[in-house]
Length: 326
Image (cartoon, rainbow, N blue to C red):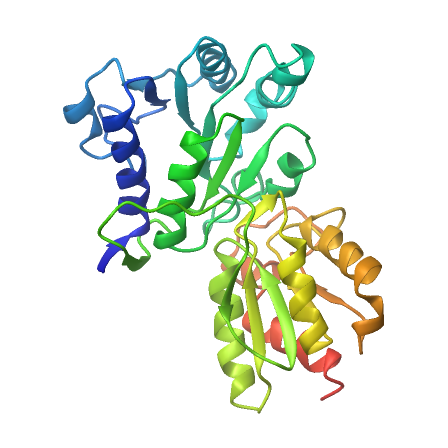
């Protein structure tokens, strides 16, 4: 088992799949000559050439549309957005084309395309470059939405996404690209739509995904010092959502806290909370609690960023509230 960076895990996933399948190509801003804005595609231009690792103009609507058309005609594009904040320029191609073509064509066309890049906050980038769009895209039928939290999951899920015949939104984080983790030497796949229990526990279930998993795992360690044994679940995929794993955990712990980097209205934690109260209400010994971002555009100042985002203190507080402990 090796220890590699998150960006290296993504690069390995893309490169391994591209070596096997000549129909796969990578396209986006600075992916080729510059080796990627975050060095995810470092060295790929030298290996695969300019016809398969393609630099684009700053025109997300245009190159997303090219990718959709290529996918409809037998290729398997990987479209990189420098940030999913910029994907709003291309959202018409993603929602109204990629997600709907298979249905609208009665199955005559498939759209095997991956849209990938960083989502959420990444430091002092202020309101227009710090938004989390997981729940936006997860709202759309026809898309699959993946948000990994570590290098191992990132590689296995990206390989599965590239092989999938449906459009997949693959969301990363600028603040995770340098994270290191153990990744197997041989080839492996992680199935889309299967959550992972990152920490076993018996007192309370905490559910999250993406980079906020680091906050949750650290909070679970703090809680353990006070005798609270938290079970931590990483959804990994937010469309489809693995409700069964969450519900089975709640049946054991009888308490649920959901933690998500998103505004509070209409997000993934809202949906999971609804499903749990619907299908496991009799097992709950306390109201379900959520820890989300504040309901404002993200400010620039570091002190306000800290107040805006879910943090260890807020998670610990909500867990204690469902445990009826001060």
